[in-house]
Amino acid sequence: MMRPFGYFVHHQGRGHAERCAAIANALPARRPLTIFCARDDIFPALPAHVDIVRIPSLFEPMGGEPTTMSDIATPATLHCAPLGWPGIRRAMATITSWFETANPALMICDVSAEIAQLARICSVPHVKVLQHGDRGDQGHRAAYDGAAGLLAAFHAGLAQPEWDTAMLAKTCFAGGLGVDTRVPERELARQRIGVGAREEMILVLSGGGGDGFGQAPLGVGARARPGARWITIGPVQRDWHATEPANIEHRGWVDNAADHVAAADLVIASTGNTTCQQILAAGKPWLAIPEWRYFDEQHRKADALAAAGVACVRPHLPSSAEAWHHALTETLATHRPDAQRAMISDTPADDVAAWLEALSKRLWAPAPGLIPSPDLTGA
Image 1 (cartoon, helix red, strand yellow):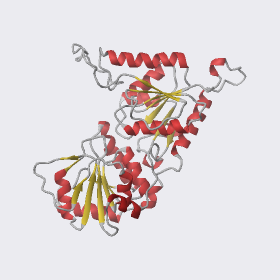
Image 2 (tube, helix red, strand yellow):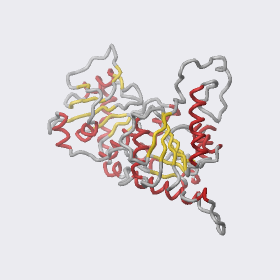
Image 3 (cartoon, one colour):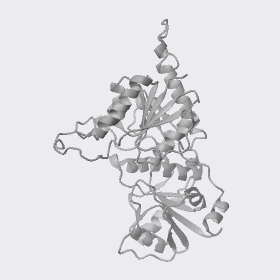
Image 4 (cartoon, helix red, strand yellow):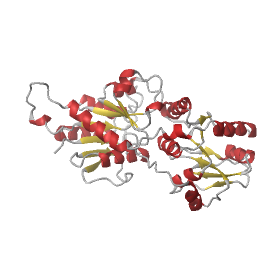
């Protein structure tokens, strides 16, 4: 039996859970995997060698937390570490108890710099999921510098320029990881979503990480391009002053986002990771509008997309008909579908699983000339 891997998943994003599930299904069946998450209902199907251990949320109070310690400063090495929270103590105790009894080969940390540092303090090698953003702060640096490896769910061509050689050398890039990048055939997709074969369709896609785009600027855009059929999926912020033309339709949450992307002639979307991978795989003209996220994650990702020439970027939705005209014209004129599709790996989950196995084997290899102890076998 191989020694187990651990995996901490931030429970507020299904993209994190889908990324974890993709890796879990690609790992060898002999490799036990224990997932720590505040929810167990966000995961796709998992294989038999995977267990989910529910822990309290590290970000949401359970009730009864003291406020008398809220004025004590948080050190620069931490991001979210409120004092006096019993849920956090219980979560950390659950994880550290598992460290002691399971003797894991690796701990994979998705998002939390604190969990990454906890693993390092407990003498457990960890792999940190790497995200875009201004993450040169002490908390992120401690998590990244102390990691045995870094995992990026995007192509190496989207690396930020400040990531140095040492950081890149220990990073596994896997464009498309955790995302179904199979692209439906355009005409079949149009039939399924009720769009005519010859209609120009502009798709506005909002993910689940925010409140969505504003209704008013989208109305301006639809009026600026009246011959196109505008369809929005995902949340849209309602504006009392918005006046919409007849060529825009709001569909809200849909189960067939891939069909909408495949059917579109142009996509307007923010730069969340899952959204990025879906649009790049489809090779669609893309007007990318980053939304607010911690550490300017989407803005830095938009910078990387623009530098790679795989998206046309604006800092916000255009605010006039003329600005919409320029943005849409540039998006179509600079479209590079082959470059977009090259950002998606053929077998990202298998590549990551093989990298994790090789990393574990290297980390736990016995020193030359020494007989390995029983604790080091089965790494």
